[in-house]
Amino acid sequence: MVKDFGMPHPQHSGYIVCPHCDALFVQKQPQFGERAVCTRCRTVLIAPRRNAFIRILALSVTNLILVIAALFLPFLQISRAGFHNETSVMDAVLAFSDGPLFVLSLAVGALIVLVPMMRMVLTLYVLAPMVMGRPPAPGATRAFRLFEALKPWSMAEIFVLGCGVALVKVSALAQVHLGSAFWMMGVLVIVVLLQDNMMCRWSVWTALEKRKA
Amino acid sequence: MPLVRLDRAGETQGMSDHPDIRSARDCGLLACTRCGAVWSMQDEGAKCDRCSHVLQSRDTKSLQRVWAWWVAALMAYIPANLEPMLRTRTLVAETESTIVEGAFELIHHGDIPVALIILIASVGIPVAKFGAIAYLALSVNRQARLSAHRRQHLYELVEYIGRWSMIDVFVVAILSALVQLNVAAQISPGPAALTFALSVIFTMLSAQSFDSRMIWDSDTAPDAPVTKETHRE
Ligand SMILES: [Zn+2]
Ligand SMILES: [Zn+2]
Image (cartoon, rainbow over all chains, first blue to last red; front, side, top):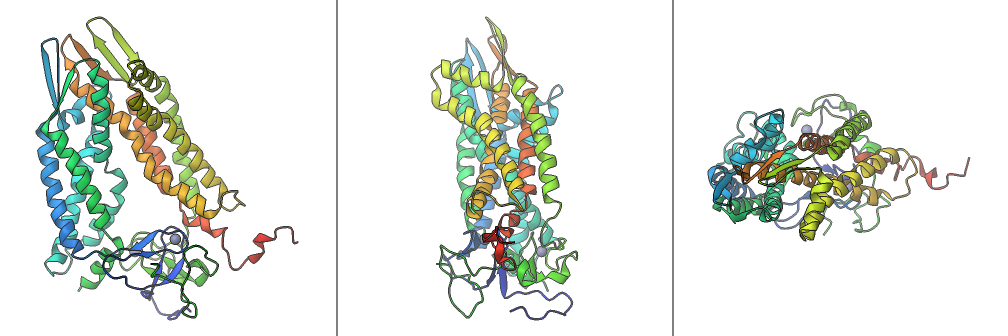
C-alpha cells in the first residue's frame, strides 16, 4: 500500500489524511461544487469552487474598505437629558485605554479590527499572484499559515451581536440610534462568512506548491 | 458524495460505517498538521517541505498544554464572576454589577432574550466548556462512554462556540465608550472585564492545544482488535 519508503523526503501526494481523525484516503480531485468528505468524521477535506481565488480576492477588498470605513464612522448614538454622545468602533477599542485595563483595549482592538484586517491583507498577498498567474510571493506559505491560525481570533461577528446587546442594555438609560457603521459591520460579517465558505485550504496549499518554481 | 475513499481493492466506502478506515499512523504515514502534506513516518521530527512545520504524527505534549491552559482559564474565571464587570453612574445612584447581576438587571427590565444571551455566553458556555475539555482530555487512552464520533462533535462544538463568550467583554467596551453623558449617565468597565477576557482566551488556547486525532486512536486500532473483548486475558 505504501510505496517509496526509503527515499529521502518522498511526499505521498496520492493520499490525503483527515486532519481531525487521521484517517488515510486515496486522494481524488472533486469537481467544482463537489466536496471530498472524510467518511469517518465527516470533516470536509476538499471543496473546490469555480474561480474561488478571484472571488475571495474581491471579497477581501470589499472587507478592507468596510472595516476602514466602519472604524471611524459612528455606529451608535445616544442622547439623554440634553446630553449627546456617539461612538465609533475606534472609541469602543479605546474604551479601556485609561487605567489598568488598557491591555484589554489592545486585545479588543486586535480581535475586532486588527486580526480581521490582517487576514484580508494576507489573502491578498497569497492569492493575488496566483490569480495573475505568477509564482507565489516570497513567504506566501508563512502568510497563509498565519491566515489560518488567525481564523478563530477574528471576532467581528461577535462584536456585531455585542452591539445589539449593548443597544438593549442602554435603551433603559437613554435613547439610542444606530449609525451607518453598524450596518457596515453587519455587511462585513456576511462577507467574512461567504469568504470562509469559499476558501478551500487544500486547494490553496496545492496551488502554492504547484506554482513554486 | 464521498469522493475520497480508502485504497482497498477499489471498493467505495459507505458514509455511515467505517470498518476499513485506517489511520495514517497505522499505515506508516503522517500528515503535516499545518498544510496536510502526507509524509512517511520516518520523516517525523523533520520539517515539512511544503510549509516548514515540524512533522509530528501525534502531538505528545498536547495534553500537558491542554491542562495548563485549562487551569489558567479556571483561575481567571473565578475572579471574573466575583468582581464587578460594569460600573454605572447616573444622577441618582452609582451601581456596580457582576456578570450575573448584569443579566438579572436585564430580566428585571423585561429583556429576557438578551439576558439569556448574556447568561448563556458568559456562564453556560464557559462552564460547559471547562467540563467538555476536561472530559475530552481524560477520555484519551481510555474506554470512553461516548463514541469517538460524539467526542469529535463535542470537540468541534467547543472550538466553534467558545469564541462567542467574548461577547460580554465587547458589550462592556461598547457601553463604556458610548455611555459618557457627563453627569446624566456614565458607564465604566470593572476589573472582571479583564479576567473574563483572559479566561475566554485561555480556554480557546486550551481547546486548540488538543490533538483531536487522539480521540480516534483508541477507537479503531487495527493492530489491537482485542479492545472490544476486554475480558479476554
Ligand atoms: Zn476524519
Ligand atoms: Zn506542511
